Amino acid sequence: MTAAIDYIALDWGTSNVRAYAIDGAGQIMDEATSDKGMGQLEPHQFEPTLLNLTAPWLSEDRVMPIFACGMVGARGGWQEASYGQVPFDVHRALKLTRVKTHAPHIEVQIVPGLCQQAPADVMRGEETQIFGLLEKYPDFEGTIILPGTHSKWAEIKSGQVTGFKTYMTGEMFNLLSEQSVVRLSVAEEGWDDDAFLEGVKDAMSAPQDFTHMVFGLRAQSLLAGLTPIEARAKLSGLLMGMEIKSGMDSFATGQVAIVGGEKLMRIYRAAFEEFDIDPLCDVEENFTVRGLNLVAKAQKEGVAS
Amino acid sequence: MTAAIDYIALDWGTSNVRAYAIDGAGQIMDEATSDKGMGQLEPHQFEPTLLNLTAPWLSEDRVMPIFACGMVGARGGWQEASYGQVPFDVHRALKLTRVKTHAPHIEVQIVPGLCQQAPADVMRGEETQIFGLLEKYPDFEGTIILPGTHSKWAEIKSGQVTGFKTYMTGEMFNLLSEQSVVRLSVAEEGWDDDAFLEGVKDAMSAPQDFTHMVFGLRAQSLLAGLTPIEARAKLSGLLMGMEIKSGMDSFATGQVAIVGGEKLMRIYRAAFEEFDIDPLCDVEENFTVRGLNLVAKAQKEGVAS
Image 1 (cartoon, each protein chain N blue to C red):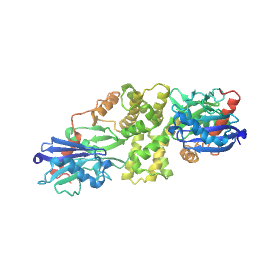
Image 2 (cartoon, chains in turn red, orange):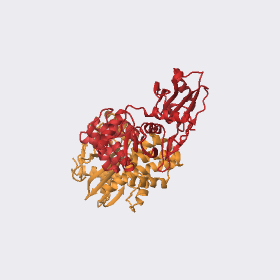
Image 3 (cartoon, rainbow over the protein chains, first blue to last red):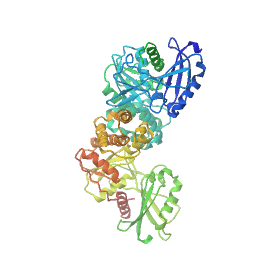
Image 4 (tube, rainbow over the protein chains, first blue to last red):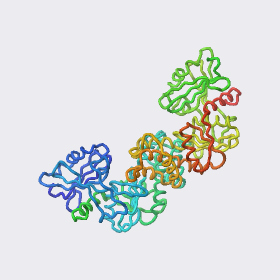
């Protein structure tokens, strides 16, 4: 098997790591995952974690190229990788960070994150998904949304990432639903489309009331019979409404694509339907792997350094 | 001493309890505090906690009137007390909740919280401070701000509480500064006036960007040298800016009073200076005790039931 592997792709985030054995055609031959995310590893623990996870794919007879993206390259990760500055063209400006390893039969390189000076913003990992989307849809012009703990909205013009904005949507949802006073009124799971859309509309029409409306979930459950499932969906809607209001004000033109898990895509679609926007949602594609394919190819061709 | 005590005032919040022995002139003769807040007590633990805290003031020879306000009257507290509805006139509509006790020598009554049906909102404890302020300043017309974990803005017209709004300012500050990704860039203490005011202005001018601007603190510390102390003050400013933008949009006329600790008052004053507003800040007064004096008097006169 090792002989057929072209390179290993690593999607190494804060809470877990996904490894893929990729063949010469850019196809996934095998994959492995672990919960040993960057958040729980000291710098010296990355190499043994990687060797352990990918052992079946390695051989001492050859040096395996490995391309990694995500928080693995953050300060406090394995090794701090540089940021590319927007406006950023993946075909021109890709500078990989070579990691020093003890094992001689791996060659690890980390993809740069992206940064924006004003307003200051950073991403690590999502840039690779963006590269993947632009590889598959080279004519895409508009906004790519990458929902999650820290949702990103990125503006694409002429194949370049020209700007982006991060929203703490997922992280605030977790903090508020699990640890604030609102937790007393919010279900641990469940969904209600109407309550979600009400939250989206309320936040969009009066974003300055955000911290008031979050407390209002508690008050509505005490006074007006708001159910825990409705409260959960409405809290999600309030956060999404803030994100959509800001994002749509900032990035108004062109197409919209959503890159993320199926569940999150469905939620964003429901919100966008209110504005007659039908975003591109390619649920089948693994854009991280596709982006790392692009990086591996660029490096082979000497475009990346 | 027991003979000279007119009643005992209890300010029983989520995280601690303050008890005051009050004489016939409404003056504080003695006080006692404990960290046994409502948040850590089962219903059956309130009575022994109270007896223990106020033992030196009690005697088996007389029944001591005790008036309590705060989360002690919340669902899950000692006994759920009713809410008064806005518009609320303390001189007309005060309905106290009598608590059943085992000890025969105490008579405990809980002050109602206030509620508002639309938009749904609730308070417990702050209403008593409002009563106290209106007792001292009967002609006050305008907005009373009560900063804290859940900041309240209450509108006062003709001696009535006509409406109010709660903001999760303090609770969100704690969650974001201690538990979100931003904690990595925020100092545990310290202050910077300029960074604070920048946060206030940024949030007021683009409240829809709130969750983006919070993440921006992390990005600014990575890219632009924002110091941990500046980040702390700016996070506070962002939350305060949201509160002030919403509060000023909702309650625009009349005077402004701030009721709270000296440190918080100073912060709000600094923000209001930007709008040439000089709020009433009576740091000397204990408005909770003054409000409970009013409640005790009303009950004696048969106005409260």
